[in-house]
Length: 108
Length: 122
Image 1 (cartoon, one colour):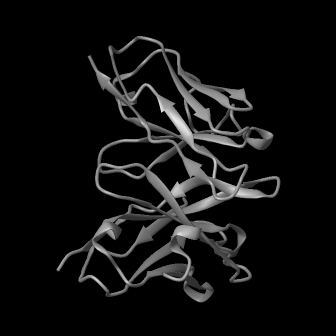
Image 2 (spheres, chains in turn green, orange):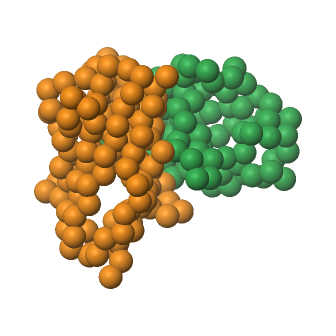
């Protein structure tokens, strides 16, 4: 099973700042089959990015994904108040699919 | 609009079974794989299984082999997840999620149910 390690565990930032979240895989993720989800307290996860860099329907363009192989990033160009949440990466190139442990974005 | 509506919270004793339903609407139920993902309190996400609603074919994560069963009723666009021999560490929110496919991989979860809390306690 591919293990995904997200860093940092928690980030304290202010609205308007730019943030880059990291997701590192224990083995190469085939075909860049890597997705990112956002989860707010008490809610289900929401798909942001799939195939490493494709935005899901309705996702604002301040969210962008990049990377290949074992290193992937999610960038939020300018944080909005509603962006403070937990972010998970997921690989689906190898079975079983697996998730990172999450990065929590909190308001500074 | 696409909606996945799950059944309500459950409290079960250790050793019992639980069956959670997920009713789909707003799209062709048989056109998309349905997955189940769980989240223990304060923890991350764990993939459990999928079902192909069209064929009834299933795949289960090794961690749940022999304890989880996924079924569906296409006449009412509903998928079911049954977990048996419950333990206290099965206490979690269980989500159903519709999957998009990319190539041969159908694990992009674009719509999620609201979640069902299953509490296992004596």
